[in-house]
Structures are given as C-alpha cells and as structure tokens.
Amino acid sequence: MGSVKAAGNGVNSVSYSEVSAGPANNNNISQKSLDAAAGRPASSWWLSAALMFFSGLAWVVSIPLLMVALGGSLQPHLGWMCGICTALALFSVLVQVEQWIAACGVFLVSFGSASQALAWQPMLFAGLATWMALLNARQQVCRPSPWLLELQYQKYAGYHMRSELHGALETVREGKSFFACHPHGILSVGWISNVVWGRQFHKSVGRCFYLIDPTLRNKGLLAKLFLDAFEGPHGGLRDTSSETMQSLMQQGESLCMVPGAYQEATRFSYGKERVALLQRMGFVKYCLRHGYRLHPVYTFGEAETYLTLNGFDEFRLWLNSKGIPTVAFWGLPWCPLLPRRDLELLTFVGPPLELPKVAQPSPEQVEEWHGKYVQALQELFDKHKAQAGKPDAVLEIF
Picture 1 (cartoon, one colour):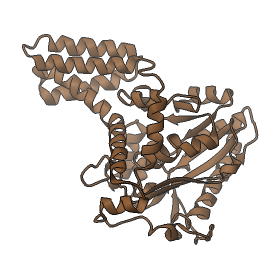
Picture 2: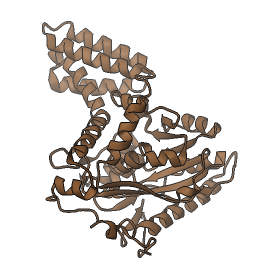
Picture 3: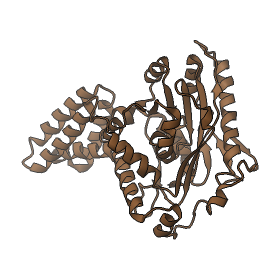
Picture 4: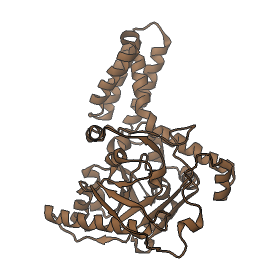
C-alpha cells in the first residue's frame, strides 16, 4: 500500500469550507436544513431520492429476486432453504452460458417443478423467474429515453447538498480520451451523479462510452432497463471486457470507467480516501496500444456516502476475485440503500497524460506509464483537496 500526505496548498481563492460548513457529520441535521442550504424545495429532494432508490434497487435486488423466484418454484419439493441453495447453484452455472440457453433452463426447471405442485404460488414464482430470465436474454429491453436521461440529469445531481464537476475541463478533447475515475466507493455515487449522468461532463467530453462490470451490464436483469434507456448521441454503457474495450478504441471512441471496481469497494472505509490501483494496469496497456489521452478523475465526498462493517479483508478480496462483491453498508438510517445526503460530491478532472501509440507495449512500458498515471492522480488529489474542504486528507493507494 502506498500512502502520501501533503498539506493543502489553497488552490483557489475561495475554498470549499468558505462556501459551506463542509461535510456534515451530524446525523441530527434536519432534512429541511439541508434543502435550505442547497437552495431547493424539499419536494425536489424526495423526487431525487425516489429515482436514486428505484435505480439502485434495480442494480442491487435483481439477482437476489431471481434467486427467490426460482427457489420459490422449487420449494414445494425442496423447501425454501434447499430451494434457494439450488437456485444459487443453478445460477452459478447458467450465468456462464448464452442468455437464451439460461432462459430455457430457468423455464424448464421452474415450471417443471411448479407444475407438479397443487398450488398457485409455485406457478407464480416460476412465471416471475422465467420472465426475468427472458428479459435478460434480450439484447435490448427498451429504447433510448431522452426524457429519462433529462430526469436523471436533474435528480441525481439534486440528491446531495452539491454535486459538481470541476478541474481541467479545458484540456478535454472529443475522441480518443480515457477517463479513469476514482474512488469506486460502495455504489459509485459520485461517478453516477457527476460523470455518467452528469450534464456538464457530457457537454465537456462529447460522445463517450461508460464501462461497467460485464455481469451488471449484460446480465443485470431489471438494471438493463436503465442501462438501455441511457443510449444516445452522447454514447452508452458497455462492459469492461477486453473485446469491448479494444473494439471501441479501434473506433477512436472516448471511454470512461472506474478501474478500482469491486476491490476498491471492499477497501472502502468511511471517511478514508482509498483507491485500489497498484495492480490495475490493464487500462494503461490499452491506452498505450491505441495512443489515448489518459485523464485521472477524482471525486471528493465519495468516502462519506455510506457507513460500512469492515474486517476479514483478505477473505473478502478473495471472494471479489471470484466476482462476488462482499460489502455490508448502510446510508440513510431509514433506508440503508440510499447514500448519506449531508455531504458534497465534488469531482475533479485532471489534465491528460499523452500516451504514445505502441502496438505491442512491453511490461516495462506499461509499468512506466502506470507509474506516471499514479503520480498524476496523486497530484490531482493534492491540488484540489483543500478546495474540497479536506486540506489534511491522505490518499491511500493499494
């Protein structure tokens, strides 16, 4: 782990602490006070919370809901516990095959079991499981929705006291740019609010493709409704597979992703600025191969979005390596899924590293430019931490 501590340098004449009192750590601050500080009506925040809740629910609950539905169709013969365990075992196999094959498998297993039970509940569970599997098998589940995009522009940004994009935006060029965003946090709230669904980021960057975990993008069930609706002239959401990244780079498209992914989520600890980057070199290799501009991007405030239960880090990191996220978190006391709102999310874009185009970069070249990128991220962090109200913050690099 690398750890560097530097004093704040007062980058701007007006600091974050002069704009507001800083991230509120007092849970007793009323919602009315927060809305007044942000200069918006309380009803506007509730709309933001509703959109944040349902989109988050689609991400988090889809796969467990499928497990419950499939397990429910099996429970007349196996019982609930064995039914759910069997559903998990089937899912671990079906997730590896083509989605139409998986949908056929879910249909045969669920209705085969439910049809032998003299009750309507198993049939209902079988229908739900099959519908979700068929939804997942479709390449596109809905058309692009400019209306939903506009709603997300407004409401995601309106959830927190402030959600803003800053930094070296004048250095951004359309095409052949790679934006590596940090930190992942628990649910990448800053990335969602200020980057993927950030109006200013879209205007600054132009057409860009935002890369997420292949299972979430291609097998995300209900989440695909939000992901497919996002498509448009501004770009779209794609998976982080090597094939997808290289295909987009061959076309000169701009890309944006969170390199730390699940590993960074596992390292998350409330109030600590942490990134998992030392072993993440693949994106640098691809940027070298295609001669891309590489921008570091950092969001202050992400570290305060959720509280977590920590411990057993090595075991959880091992599970993450198998594609199993392992985080126990809660945000608002009355709704753990929603992030804490008494904070400000400030995202800063750094100037680019101009990488040479090297068809087959050597490990030494990748390591060299990865080191330069880590240094650029550290400099971005140190330059803006005072502006973000954290002059004494330390960036921990794992």
